[in-house]
Length: 107
Image (cartoon, rainbow, N blue to C red; front, side):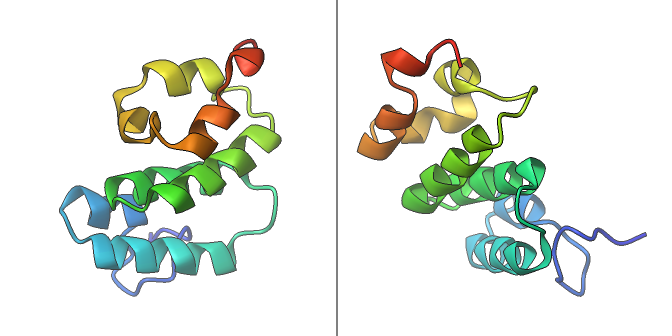
C-alpha cells in the first residue's frame, strides 16, 4: 500500500528523499504533503520538520516545529529538541532558541 503522507507517484515519503540526498524532491514531497494533511496533524508537521532539517531548510523546519509544539504532542517536546542530534543544526537558529528557551524546558 502506498503512503498517503505525500502525493508523490512513487509513494516515497519526504524523509526517504532527504535520507538519500535528494533534497529537492524531499522538499517538494513535504510541500505536497502539506496540501493533503488536515490542519492539526502533529505527526505531519514533525515529518516535514525532519525533512526540512535534512534538506538544510532551517527556517521552514523551525516553523514546522512551532506547529508541533502548539499541538502539545505527548511523544515530542522541548527536552527532546535539546538532546536529539537531528535537531543540532537548528540549535544556533534564533527562532529555534526562542522556542526551546529556558522557560519552556518543562513543556
